[in-house]
Every structure is written in structure tokens, then in C-alpha cells.
Image 1 (spheres, rainbow, N blue to C red):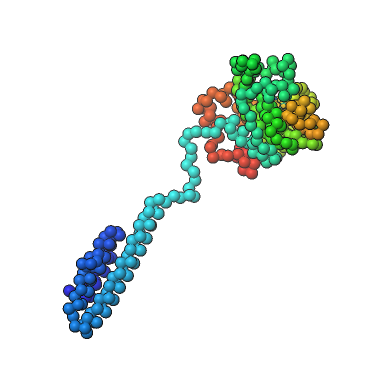
Image 2: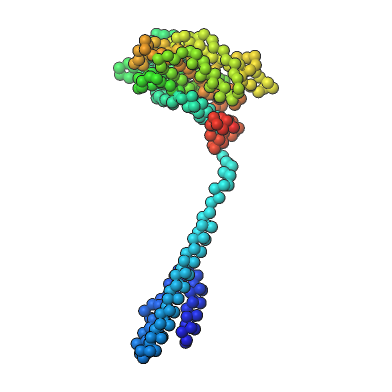
Amino acid sequence: MSLATLEQSILAEIDAATDETALEAVRVAALGKKGTVSERMKALGGMSPDERREAGAALNLLKDRVTEAITARKTRLQDIALDARLAAEKIDVTLPARPQTSGTVHPVSQVWEEVVQIFGDLGFAVAEGPHIEDDFHNFDALNIPPEHPARQEHDTFFFHEKPDGSRMLLRTHTSPVQIRTMLASKPPIRIIAPGRTFRCDSDMTHTPMFNQVEGLVIDETTTLANLKWILAEFCKAFFEVDDVKMRFRASHFPFTEPSMEVDIQYSREGGQLKIGTGDKWLEILGSGMVHPNVIRAGGMDPERVQGWAFGVGLDRIAMLKYGIPDLRAFFEADLRWLRHYGFKALQVPTLAGGLSQ
Ligand code: PHE
């Protein structure tokens, strides 16, 4: 076989190799120890010096071209394999998310996030406390001594008495977080504390477990004016309206002095609740200047710092905003109810995006 024919047949085999294993077999068959090209190299030994020089040079060139062709083919095969893999593993990140088939975010969770967003934007941090509390944090430190009538109003769930006569309880409001926060930090304090609360009570508007959001600001110069402004800002952002008519009514809580309850104005149009204007008032929260005894129980000096607190019913404002008539349904885990009132998991509330979109 002429050298040219040999080269052609090797190059054809290289071209025909469809994967790296096949290509390697072609390389061994040509350039390996017993390969066709190597055999020709060995034959050079039996030639005259002149013949050898000419044939040797030609063989070396052939060897170079074959090696080059193998390398080129190898790169090509790798490219083809990579392309195939990329095509197989391709993900189109521009595709819209698949619509959910099941599972929604509970209105309480959604409203909780909305409230955290709004107060976060106003510079408030989120604080937490335990659901199982002691008398001190839930009552005593909040200026509700043992014989105070407010203790009866709270319909408290108590645990069994301990050997020392004390009883743990399920917190009846989020106000104990005020005490825990004051004892654990220094003013200025600016927190909200959303969380579960418990009272032995059940009807259309009361459930034994419900949610509140506490607010607490302690500073040297904080006043009721700041509280009124913050609450107005909160109501406008939360109910997503430009203006909310609010009424501050003198009231009484043992832990605030003076105390006020806050009503917002609303109207009912064709069964729809409209917040902000109208001729009806709806109570949404309790608030006031933190009582000096409470500041003292929190380890601070009421001569040096003062502040205000508020407590909002989280479930209640969820009912108002989303027109949900019965509180009890919130905690019945009825899937039909959840599908109707629930929110899409990807619908994360942000102030920039419009809370409820
Ligand atoms: N803790 C009160 C309640 O549950 C609400 C409240 C909080 C009132 C803070 C005033 C200040 O009814």
C-alpha cells in the first residue's frame, strides 16, 4: 500500500470515529507500538541511507498530520458531547413560574408579613417572647397586681401549680414582650412584637388563641404625638388608602397612663367594608404612654426615659382588610376557606410592590 493510500485510510477512520473510545482505537492502530505507521518506521532500518532519509522524512510528515487530525477530531468530539449535554440540561430561566396547584399562605401569615414590612420601614425591629409566661411578665411587671380586676378580665389559661405555689400561664397579650425587651436592652427602644396570645373565650369575634402585635417605643423625649403619627402612617399603609379618619378615645389600661383606644372610620357599601371614610367607627387597638411603674419594672428610670405602647389585634385587622366575616374560620384549617382567602406563596408583601398587589 502506498504511503498516500495509508494516510487516506487512516484519516478516513479518524473522521469516522464517533466517540473518544473509537478515536483512541484508531490512534493505537496507526501510531501504537504495532500500528501501521510504526511498522513502516521499523522498516526504515533495512533501507539504504538515501532511501531512509527520503522515506523517513515522508513518514514523519505523515505521522504529524495523523496526530494533528486526531487532536482536531478529539476537540470536535468533545464539543459535540458538550453541546449535547447543554441541550439536554437546558433550563429556560425566563419562563414564568408554574402556577400553583395547591397550598396558599394563610391570611394571618400574610398580614403578619405586611405589618412587619410597614414597621420595618418605619425603623422598628421585631421582638419575641415565649407563649408560656409567668405572672411577673404577664401581670405584675405590667402594673397588674394580684388582686387587680384586670386579671379576671383576661380569662387566663393557667398551668398546674408548682410546689412553690406559682403557676405558669399562656400569655394573655403580647405586652409581656415589653418587659422582656426593656430588661434585655437599653433605650432608645423601637420594637414591634407580633405573636400568639391566649384567652379562654370563644364566639364569632373571639377564639381561645389569637394574634396581637405589640408596639413599644422608649426614649428620652417620645410623646403621644409621635404615637398618633406612627399609628396614622401604619393605618394608611396597611389599609392601602391615602387617608384614614381616626378617633383617639380616652380609655384605661393598667400599664399605660394616659391610655387611649383607637377607632378608624369605615363604611359598608353593598356588603363591602370600606376603610378610611364613612360614618361608622371601629375599634382596632389599645395604646398609651407607658406607665412609670412598668418602666421601673423594665429596669429603667421613669425620670429619665418615657415612651408609648400599643397593642393591635392582628386577626382583627386581617378580617377588616380582607373582608373575612368570622374569626373562628381562621383556625379551622378548612382547605376550601384557605383556597378562597389564602395568598399565593410567591406574593410576598412589600411596600414598594403594594402590600397586597
Ligand atoms: N395589652 C392590651 C390588650 O391586650 C393592649 C395594649 C397594649 C394596650 C399596649 C395598651 C398598650 O388588651
